[in-house]
Length: 226
Image (cartoon, rainbow, N blue to C red; front, side, top):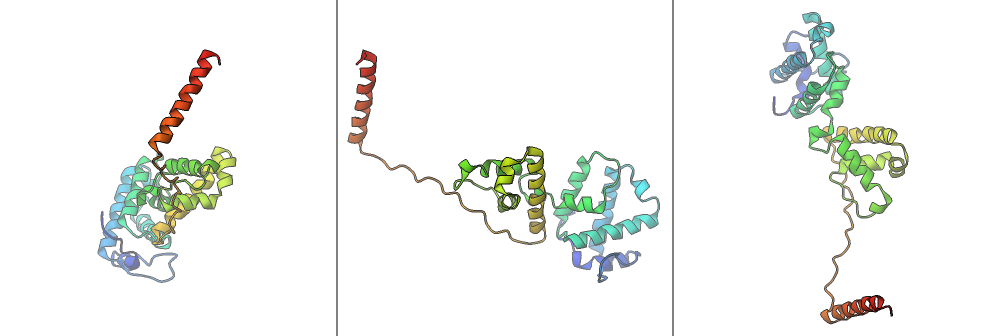
C-alpha cells in the first residue's frame, strides 16, 4: 500500500463494489477501485491482527457495513495518505487485545506522531519538560514545531507543576491535536529559534599571562601560610 488515498472518490468506489451509500456523509461520493483495494487490504490485515474479528463481523453483510463505516470515518477525519493507514496498522500490530478496535481508535493511531516522522509521545514529553523549565528560557531548542505548540497549548507552568501522570495526559492531548493539524494539511508556525550565547572572543595573551601569574601567586601564598 503506497501513494495517495483518493479520499474524495471513496463513496463511488463503495457503490461500484456493490455496497450501499456511505453512512454519515452528507454527500455521496464515488469510490474508485484503488481505494476499494486499499480498504479490502486493510480489513484483511485487521483480521490477521485481531483473532476475534468474526465476533465483530459475523457475516458478509456486517463486513460490508463495517467497510462503509470505516471509510466514512476516514473521510470525516481527513485521512489523506496510505502512510497514515500504515501507521495505524503498525499500532494495531502492537495492540494487545484480540478484539477489533473501533474505527475512531484506529483513526487516532493513523494520526500518531510516528506517522509524520515526529518524536514519539514519551520522547516529545521529555523534550517538553526539559524545554519548559525556567532554566531553558530563551535557549530551548525544539526538534519540531508540533512539540513546541503542544507545550504552549498545555501551558509551561502546568507541565512543570502538575504531577507526571496528569501533565503527561495533558501534553498527550495537545500533541495529538498538533498531529491532526499536520495530517489535515495544515502547516504549523515555526518554533522560536534558541538564543545561543555568543562565542567568547579571543583575549590578549599578555592579559591572560598576567592573570595566570596572579592566580599562581595567590595559590603560593596560601600554601606558604601568608
